[in-house]
Image (cartoon, rainbow, N blue to C red; front, side, top):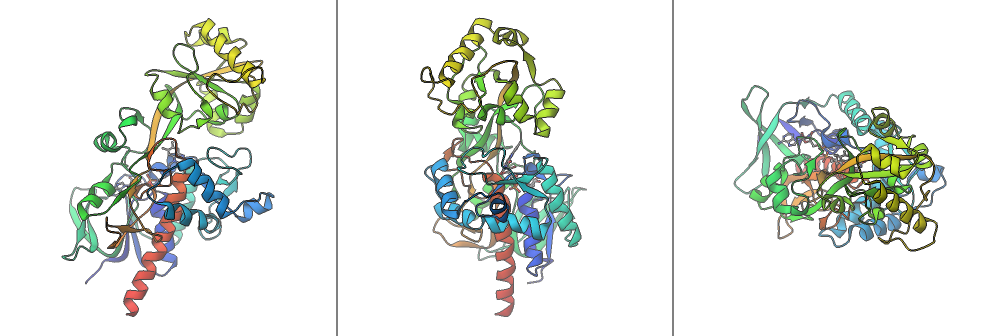
Length: 459
Ligand SMILES: Cc1cc2nc3c(=O)[nH]c(=O)nc-3n(C[C@H](O)[C@H](O)[C@H](O)COP(=O)(O)OP(=O)(O)OC[C@H]3O[C@@H](n4cnc5c(N)ncnc54)[C@H](O)[C@@H]3O)c2cc1C
């Protein structure tokens, strides 16, 4: 077959860029097509945190961690899953992934020791010092450019091309000027993320979060699922998603979950708490959703000071997204909330934090609480960030049919593939599951695609 390129990567987020770099470095010719005018996708919007166990960064920081411990954390947090092998595989290769990011890609990442975040029993998130996914994407893009890998933005893939045996042999692309063009490739890597931007698919697979505002990139419109279903691919963990319980409103940026993890609370429009916030930023999303209106995060000066180390939080505070007052009643007045209800909520919570009585909602981790001194408040709404279900893949990111056989030449990673966060709902999301799948599986897909080509050429 006459081909235009060895490996065609569809999508230029973290997964696609990682896949392209890995395939190129393993000897394949590679091209990337991206439907948006800018590369980066959701990866640019993320905090760029990638979890990994047993890295040299952890050793240098004196943190003992292991693949077994990481796997156990993911399994415990995620609950029942359609792909336990994938969880093990990505945990087992996580240190390689992060060290590859630092060494081969040249990504400027550091180990975050200030917090562990949801689902992790030791500090293992590696991220840009700024905690901005855009910095990680910029480093990946610089590595793509340095290698001379062509990247065509504004070129959305409209369909995959298969031969009469069902093997994928390329893709049909709509170019920026509306023309259709076929690109033939030996291997195709789907790095198009999930379907959080496709209302119909969210309603079909994740009805619990249907109707929530979508805060991710517009490109996540579910083509992997739509094309995959047509080609006979199996879907896995399709009801799982990552939500965020505290998107600042009306600013639309994230209120850092550090404010809650370090002891803050969330009250509803009636000024009352409604659950155990330590479920985490994703796990708590359905609780906030069920309030059917604005909610309010409340924390104190000590928590503010800790969180102020995060640039995005400081920006939000500087733009007036976080207001302060000296008493719960004065805090309530800033948003027209019932003063007595907010005062009672803070007082009751503080009693639990001081160990004077059990928390009404079973919260056990109070970190820096009780809440004292100057108090802060931020109006929040729940958001849908990305979906965690997708195409079932094997250990090398090959897309699988329902009978377990791979669809020849087709690979998937990141949000296009079945995720690590359990079968359904928001509670299974451990911090960094999205980017571990994106970069970990993307790299494995690139390596496997290049390896297959070598073997086929040698045969
Ligand atoms: C606000 C926010 C914060 C987050 N924070 C974190 C975090 O700290 N850690 C973490 O692990 N995860 C986080 N996530 C999730 C994480 O961003 C995603 O899981 C991850 O970026 C997915 O990477 P990806 O490469 O699969 O998708 P993306 O980065 O979205 O890239 C997919 C690309 O494919 C393109 N595309 C789609 N369809 C087509 C098509 N038909 N043709 C061509 N191109 C196409 C899209 O335009 C997009 O550019 C966060 C998400 C959000 C929204």
